[in-house]
Amino acid sequence: MIKINNPSVRQKRFSSLVLRCVSSFITENPICLLGFFVFCSRVVASSDLKKVDIFLWSEFFTSEIIAPVLDKKLEVDKTIILHIKKKISSDLHLKHIPEITIYLDCERVFWG
Image (cartoon, rainbow, N blue to C red):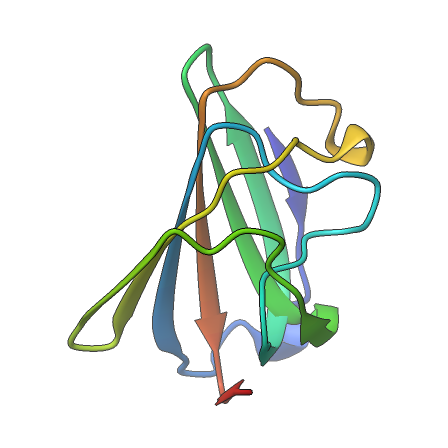
């Protein structure tokens, strides 16, 4: 398990954004998903044979997210589930994983 923590933001409350990525995800760019900005504070990536969970927070990633393929968007309360088909970033050292679940805990999300 990989953890990148920022103690200064641990106590902040964020709205929850859940992204489910089907098949592989992203190419060489760092975690990118279509048309919104997120402010995140940490990353936690855990992997097994079938699924990878990634938690993104503002200090780690604050920029526009670009989704190459957006199959489906489902919004439940503060939860948004996106189905995306792409390759897993080589930077994450994750290959041949059929499904990725990404949890983005955000202060603000701007849809383009």
